[in-house]
Image (cartoon, rainbow over all chains, first blue to last red):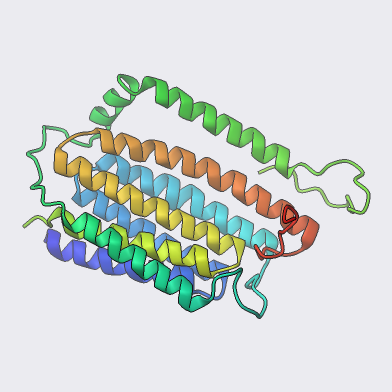
Length: 177
Length: 101
């Protein structure tokens, strides 16, 4: 059952990943990203990371994709890409670079032949992760909260329309997110 | 029947390469951002896989912190994209060249 489930989710994730970078409209990319995130959540469950799987669905599939869709709706951009070549890299060079990097990555990762260790009881549950989070990892946890606070303040500061900037019509105000 | 760890690692490598290709090839800032999310998720999958292989919870905690930073990064990045769109009416990353000499 696990092998079948892994095959299905891997196929979905790869198809979604290709969809993200190949779609012409940003909305389709966002939906493909959603497919990738949900498949990875199933993979996390297979790997015994229940709490991370739930977080993946809530934060990534819930919050981040909704934020993307919201911004796409706000900007109502069709594609955002005019005709012409890319920034500096031609398509063929970019793809060749990526393929080279991917082969290197595969070679490095394929050398790992570790058999999965026996899992302690309750591995990956909310209780185990929470104990580690509020025990050994309490300081990084607090640092993460500071990062989130700074992000919030930054988003409000960026989203705020500056008063009476010359050349910029300050008609409609959209406020922060 | 459990799936061996190298399969998960290969999937993660493939997803990372897809995200990298997206960053290099696409020019819509929104899609570049989604490609970055793709790469972050590939790395997260590696973390969870190794947490399973070594039976240690640390990898899953790293994923937690990556999630927090990714959420912040998306919020700030999208705010910047909205700001650029307001002043230039475009989300093409080639048009945002104010800092180019």
